[in-house]
Length: 121
Image (cartoon, rainbow, N blue to C red; front, side):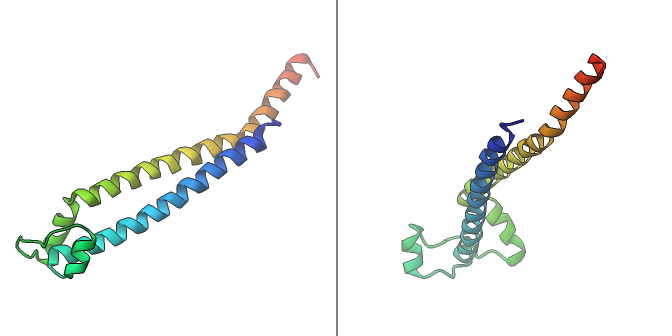
């Protein structure tokens, strides 16, 4: 029971770090999605293309209803999505661990009371 606050602090710190990374990565994903949208529409300047090391899109300009298919199939966006899903899994795990740590005091108290009951106290 004495170690519970230390464990709680450790996992809260880890949770905050992962949530901050998740927020940053989600922001990066949104910006990349916007840039890819503009890329496929042919709306990027030469400077922007050069900055991203991309060549001018030579394919047919997709219609707005086709754009989701283009963005879903993009390798760069998929890599960012995989990282986001990984961090979401980490957040779920850390929140579960914190839930168990919070319940730990109750479990210890219950175990002590059970031992007292068995001893006839």
